[in-house]
Amino acid sequence: MNIITYPEPVLRQKAKPLTEINKKVYEKVEEMMALMYRASGIGLAAPQVGWSVRLFIIDVTGGKYEDKVFINPTTVGEEGELNKEEGCLSLPGITGKVIRAQKIRGHAYNLKGQKIEIEVEDLAARAWQHEMDHLNGTLFIDKVSPATRLALSHQLKEFERSYRDKSVKVSV
Ligand code: ZN
Image (tube, rainbow, N blue to C red):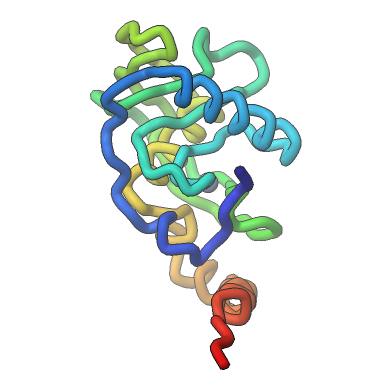
């Protein structure tokens, strides 16, 4: 398992609900945790490791969440607005300001299959919204201002070029 980077197509897919929590899920989540910590990230969504299911992990400092694994999450409420810099492990080296709700309320299931309720603010709320976007095939670069998008266009093209080079198949 490794972290998939832009513009791999799986990052643009709408992920499917997870229907069963089994040994395989535990193992994958453990691997995701290790990858996230190694990359010094605060969140990682399953599609970012090529696993197109509705699951993400978040670990922000300060113990904002009791759980770190969120399965089949839904956002039920949003409040306020904050325009802050963010980045993504699938877009290494790129950051941009994104307007997000300051506070969110949501539901999800934890790894034990229990339904959990979430009410978080600021960084924890931003991470939730960012990871939720991943489950719907949306990346933060879709949400930056047109000026930021333009400023990032060169770097994005570099990602696209190296993806193309990597995916060329040689047949003789
Ligand atoms: Zn991301």
